[in-house]
Length: 630
Image (cartoon, rainbow, N blue to C red; front, side, top):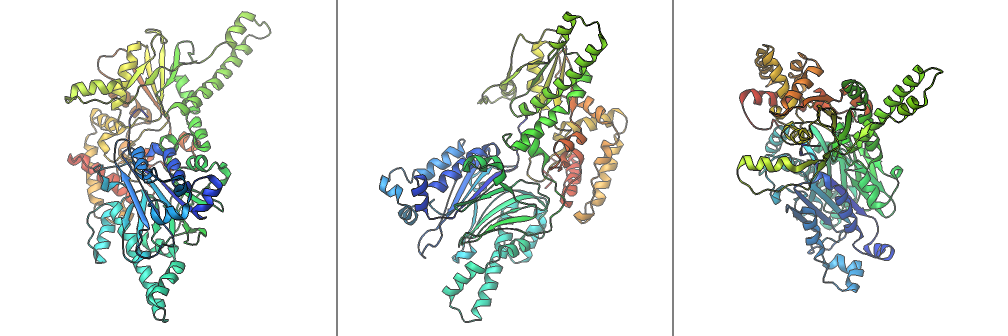
């Protein structure tokens, strides 16, 4: 993606099913769990851009001894910094101490059987250490302790916050993380108290009741009660102080979650390839946590995957497939290739099948896989053209012409090169902008001046600013006759509210194109009418709201919006004509059939809160308010 957009976090959870001495004997280290957590987090690092954290929990610890350890980092090299600080605890130990798992557990932090890691990709707010997961809700009663980390955004935090207030709580801030922590924590307290009262009436001592609570705490019931009014996309992982653990996934499966288990270990994470690499297991062994279900690991190591709410329609985030998840997942790799392949005909129609005068390239790095698919599609179309030309020759085949036909190839080149990340300490905006524009460079001497058309594939165009201020500026120096930018994603028209930082309507180049078209066609009054419809729905329950912005886009064709976007992203004073070709929603759905959550393209939100957010975002645009709508 040429433009960096912030998005959902990465999360990993590990439960070691054997004593630490087992891993020392089999794998040569008592820190097996910690090493696996580090590898899992490294393999999901694309998700975390501004912070990381981990927590561990020890089982069967006597009172008076610390059993929960946590470390977080928001340093620029957050992941290295995090694990350097954790592992420095072990650097001065003797080989004998390092090999003694029971001694390590009794004497050092980060040596528990339960481990949780989190990569923070903040969607808003500051990047303070306090905003890094995991979060702790501590209590002197061991089963009331809660460690929570998540990959989520809720659209109705205000509603959930008010419920907490009505329950008698006094939350320290209004945020989805704190609200979720306190919401689950409240029902954890309630479930523990219920069990305590139940067993107390039977005459058990308080110490005996603790052991009974450890065994009888019903996490399925707890999660069902706590999440009853959650509206959003989420994967949340929790560790309970006595040793139970869970990872839960939203009813529509918006956010991804996978798990693997054997007799030694249980692992759950945001990405399947991370588990495959860290555990060296085949794809068939890694299972998806079903939507509306939770993976529950009890204190004794037994596991279950159970529903905690009624599963809805499967609407996995299609942006995961286009960009966010790592492309080394087999399914995602093939889907991205298919996205590119389906654009081949539209591209060839634009260049009029002129392979001789067209250079095909991509914008590194995440568009590369889709570009392979585009090349496959071009080759397929080229084979059809070759067959037609050969057939036209009939029986009088000219060897020279035949050879020329067979030797025709798509001119596939690496034209755009992404340099190392530019860091600048220049204060003034003009100079800083000039430096940022040089994040990309180009390969000179391949595109023939004023004769060749340059086709560039990107995986999406969100705001259009990087495309205008950097990429098109630079490639125009090659003096192509025309520049065609191809997006493997459809036009991003609507805000996201489930984890991706795309919440302000006026930041989308597609929406700016829409507004420009309305003004040019004397339809600007429709903006005010849409605003009034949004205001009329403002006090309705979110379940009764509908997306009022969709009607505005219906005024113009998809191609008209694309053409206006091309104008917007064309820098002043460049000679080549710029064209933009977008993926269609129909081809997106055909390419990613198992992940049809495409609300940012279609406006079809998977939860009622989404419609409230899009209407509020539009109202903020009309009111000139520069803030997110949830």
